[in-house]
Image (tube, rainbow, N blue to C red; front, top):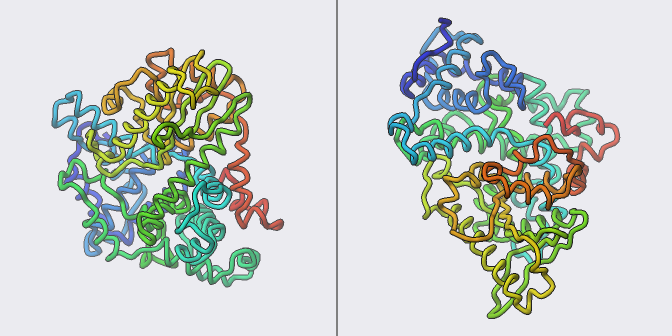
Length: 495
């Protein structure tokens, strides 16, 4: 058997020791090269399908956190990296330790979805949504935090330039084996780039938001852990998510996981920076903005009436949006929530904040459905003669939220409810080869399909362009500049 293959389970200790055999200064550039080569979903064609982005990111994390520059001979080959990736793929899990009980399998599904699916979001949607949400959506309430200049205060530049820098760094990493060197900006061929975003802005934004050093990484890696269980170590927060570039590893900056660059420019990346800088008011105002953004997406639906929330007795409020089709009433509740780190570790707990918010959203759907069917006067314009479904839209994906094991933490209700992410809704509203109501009705009638994500049932369907996302993407610097309009930084396929 080849040295890089395993026919047995591997402990986390053995895996860590295998990574530590190579010096970080030798290993990390090899990881960065592999990440740039097997970007997006091309890892399916990598040797033995071992070059998964989540495995590469963790090998980098282990090398940074536990590596030693005095071990090995200073060399590192592709074969060395492949053996580490193979060890990662064979790591044991608490599910095996717990003999595969129903609860342990459910927890494993949470961990695996959190580990893998977060690397499989599309860069185009994530970045386009940022402008569409923050710059092109009007709030329903007067903000105190998200006012003119908030982006300059938080980012040190406009939101548009910040995302433009994110795009530039991503393209640079993919084309230069994971590297970006600020020194390149003074080269003649970069004059056109710096005419769009000044070189000083590119340097300052990169250093301020994207770069970390070895000491800072090690400190954050330790303080960020929630568990000391070695089985769970690889599912813990990776500090490269917060700062994907490293200083001190050769010329300029090195990104061991190029997949983690784009998320810095996504609404989720802005959320964490905004809350750290402005406090909880940023989260509250973002939640209001997100609700209005979902309304914008719903209004793209053909042959449907979209109604905003209804205030009824004692100033109570219905779901955020009610969509009326000829054959379906869809009750939409919006939650700007995201999976917590506890969920990513496999803690399926009714007291979990994120799951509690989803449970509350399901209850809101059921209450509104009762008001519609009971012909409450405030809901008289909503028909009560057709099926009713609920849709809970979250800012970030809860990948297993519709699975039977996770529905146990939702409320018991008569109205069927589907949980979907903003990205899934953005796809749903572009459905072309059948009506959306027909798709939802067929999905709900199928006991198995109703437990799948919306993206799963949309697979193979004909989808069109999302005009709101396109407008967000077209607002960024590289797309606006005529001379760079065909450059890779302006093309969605690169991201």
